[in-house]
Image (cartoon, rainbow, N blue to C red; front, side):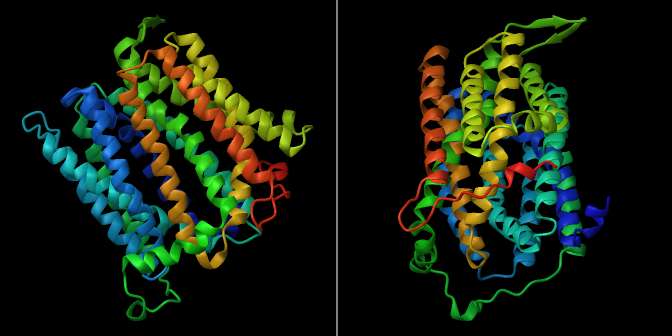
Length: 421
């Protein structure tokens, strides 16, 4: 409780608003691929979402650049309002009496692009607000709150998926607007060091801004490894969700029918319950291992778990390998987060966040590509493809953390020991 009181207002507002926003976005964003496959086709869903992810590549870099020259609060508020309006238009496009696929795709594209712009802005505001005395606590509570929100959101999305799709998205627009009001009232104004008049927005200026970031080979390779590893989780909400919807063997449990959509929601809830309830236990029983061994163990569990989820089609095996994958996430995530955070210079947080956001977009592209690839390859072939790609990502992550790259020394300090204490 004392730790909560010690947090500044910016962090409190961010944690609370992000909790509710995470619930509602988890309730509909993972189902966008299903919405599009229902409205048009699976192939259209994969191609459209892949193109949108590619469009977000330059957006991610632009967002990181803009936040270093424009006021952060004003930028975040503009982005938040645009997303709220986009969600309203998406909800209108899905009304039973007025289904308009063009309006839905355009509105979702605006939402997705604006989300990419806001990521770097909000990420930078949070990093600026974190102080060393609350750093560990902020990461811990944010990790937990996010997973609790994901559980509620996945459950809500699974329950409401068969109902009117516009209801969930309309609820999302309301939440986004309320978050806008909270940010407007409680986030303090800021003033960036660079003067807008002296810093013209141009392609050359953007390239120059990212020049130093791209020279940081260790961070670049770490970002690439994150992109590959994150593909597994994002594939769960795209390729896996569609595959389960189409081919999952429906199962009755205590008179409750679990179909493919409910199975996907169940996997998300299992993931979250394991994180929320068993995190401390997992950390405790792996603490006898050194940091390198823990990272290898965590990544191995993660790769094996998600690779099997890609092709399995029965309830119990799916749940078992989701548990294995989640344990791997619990073990490796604190180590990765600590290394990444310590690599980012204070005066380049915007552009570093932009590159990190680009890495997330690459993850999404790989996941969306899986939808298209899944129409060609068998589930077993998809398992082999996923296992090979994730193994490559795991090796790159280990290499970028523990081996010297260029002039930068590998990081050896660990926050993983006290991350959950």
